[in-house]
Image (cartoon, rainbow over all chains, first blue to last red; front, side):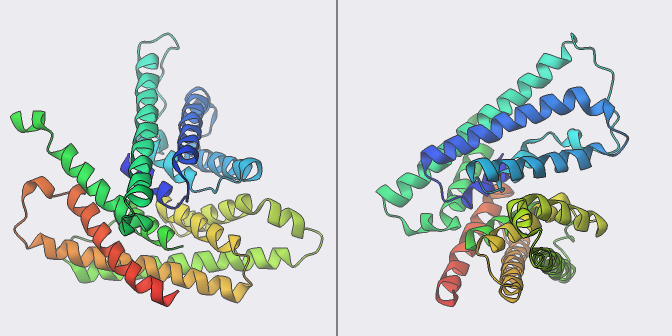
Length: 165
Length: 168
């Protein structure tokens, strides 16, 4: 999730634009997974990964032409895409459309997307507050967000329920 | 451009080429230098191809209009040919894109590619050195892993920002 956020450090966007970009990334991620889930069996062996990256490049070009969104967002999509999805050696298993696996799989992807959009908005909000309201110089460069990420990672790693375990 | 150096330096450090064991920093340093040289050469080659294509009057407009598509396909093919990681390919696209936005001539573009590659290598070298130092330091388990990595990256970024501003 954090690695997927990193390209947003390159975008000079405020809260609203970063939110729109994050929503676009999530929508695109869902569309991509939906598209490849149903078509992956049509691709010859070991060509799915090439098709996926070509798909990303074509959409990066289209978004640049339509909205002038720089193509760094494809890095976020890449990191949000499930690892098994790009595994050349994995064979697509037979899953019936009405199997319980389908809604569970898509539900996990929906949660990933919603979590990512929330994470981006939270960090952008923190950056806006730190840079504009508090005037902290560290937020004018990547260091500010990396230090915030360190704090978040520390809190995540030391959650109370984990200590009980 | 500084944001790109730190962002992709960190991404390459985390998900780039298979890292050498932390116990052997010289091997890690060798890999960083090699990756940086590869990044520089690949980026420069794509910029040269782009400049060459843009020299032809008939296709100049199309080359500029579909630049991302051209960069992307070239970066992907070159990365696969060199058996590089996916993050390397994405870093090449990002570098070529940010350089092409400035519309420099070829020599300036190659110079910028050198600055990006050297900056990424410097960032990764500092991160490797500090991680190696941490390896032999008593450190609480609660900050091991991502918290310490982000903290180190943030501190290195602050130091390099101090160097970057007077230099550029």
